[in-house]
Image 1 (cartoon, rainbow, N blue to C red):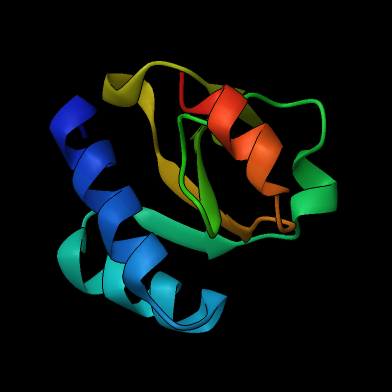
Image 2: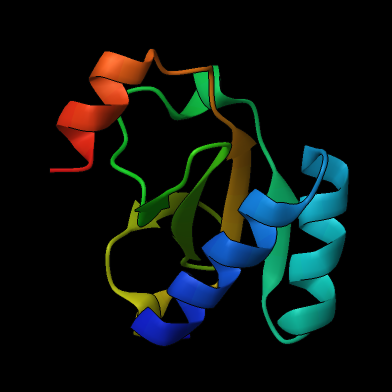
Length: 97
């Protein structure tokens, strides 16, 4: 996985009507990587690899037993996908700049 894959992944995830459909689309596009739906509350405090208007993507790695978040796409073993809470228009304008 690389930065272009993350960008494409976010486009696919954000275009899907729901999180289940987002996960399915990502699994079809990236069959070699594990894609897991998670709750946004479980990801609080973690910085997403990509954040869209509807969904966030986090990269995860495993040592074979424990999982952790990584910011290195080359080390990612999984892509975590969560629906994001609605962001007020004013906050979105700040985030987009």
